[in-house]
Amino acid sequence: MHYLQDLETLCCINSYTKNKAGVDKVGQQMQAWLVPLGFSVTTFTRETLGNHLLFQTPHKEGAKILLLGHNDTVFAPETFETFSHDEAWVYGPGVCDMKGGNIVALEALRETHKRFGTLYNVDFFLVSDEETGSDDSKALTLELAKSYDYCFVFEAAGKNLEVVTGRKGVGTYTLHVKGKAAHAGVRYTEGINANLEAAYKLQALTALTNLEEGTTVNVGTIQGGVGANTISPHCEMLLEIRFANEKEKQRLLHALEEITNHAFVPGTSATCKGLIQRDVMEPNAAQAAFIQTLETLCQHPIPTEKRGGVSDANHVASCGVVTLDGMGPFGDGDHTVHERALKSSFNQRITMMSHILAWHQEHQEFK
Image 1 (cartoon, rainbow, N blue to C red):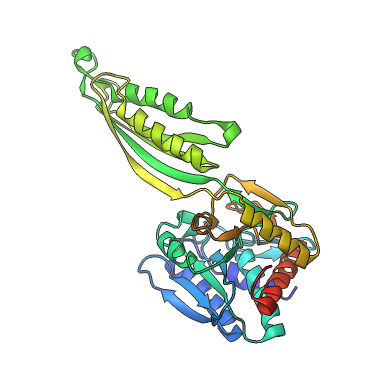
Image 2 (spheres, rainbow, N blue to C red):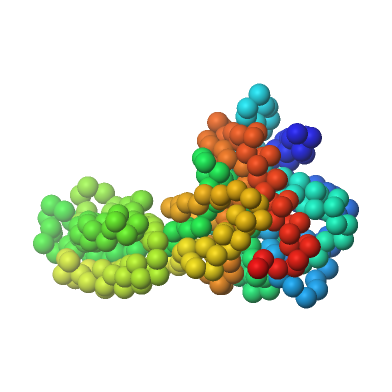
């Protein structure tokens, strides 16, 4: 398990998304490991975020693979910067989300390079802002994805080493309600209560949730009014929608527009601003056929699962690229100081990814 030393190297570099210097240092270390394997690097320089890095091998005729990861973590400096391990587990910031996944990809590439020498048609894209929604890297990922036939994303595996075939889409919106201020004691009837309107809208939004379809609507924060003695002239709600298919996405967007424009309290008005941050990643026939092919060449079943959480796999899948996520090690406690990853899962994932890359280098296709 010599690769655990490399994992420790990465985990001991603080790469909180807003820590540009730390994120870039992780990227520089990955570059030091990947360039000797024949990768060229394109740096997408950013002023306040870490730089996004695209590592490329020579391209020739054949299927093109994108490996996708991120260098940032959620941990601010001095909050969680230790690394340790015991017989079964490794502990530290990013061991499963997703410096551990990056190490799986790196080690599989090393094994494949050792066997074949020059690699072809397999590139590795590392972004710096996944943990804050990939707002900056999203456009890059969507543009790059057009050049690939297959994508493997190295977020953590499932508990039984499932790969991820589906992820919900997610959108975040801010709904502003406008009313009219008035003295709550002297001129109560002259006021138009924005908070009351927001309360009606909250109920209507929450009613859009359909757990059977995997659809959730959550109003996470509400802020309104100026004081107990004043009819509230304004209120703001921050809400999130999650959906498991395109039909539900369209239903939610239509309903959100209707609820925004309908005044439950006469005299109020509202506006809504936001966007779909990550579109839905839906399981599909091409993906299922690809998994069957991989099971044959790896000579073992590949269990699958769908997740409510999102990743950059959503972006690539939305471009029609056959995408598999959860290619990293299994772990838990991610986004907490208890984050850990199972040692044996590293071995399984590295072996599986090495088989896949070796087949690709030998055949340049998956048929």
